[in-house]
Length: 106
Image (cartoon, rainbow, N blue to C red; front, side, top):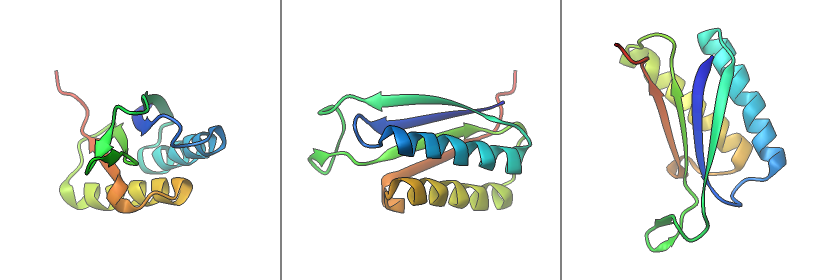
């Protein structure tokens, strides 16, 4: 499983969009890492997140890859991940923080 954490503002996305994101993220992790996505959703309570003194519309989507990635591989994956999120949510790329971490080394 590819662990994915999605952090959004409460009420920012509907249940329908959340389901679509789950499906698209699972397709993405299967295609790019050969493994299903295990998605952990976190909602920031209304009034707790601000950008430039306005309620935040930003999202964070973070994955832990199942292998180490070179930058020339990571960069196009991050772009694809953020574009996927933008298509499903309508957020601009400026509102999305995308992260693809290498697996932890013990």
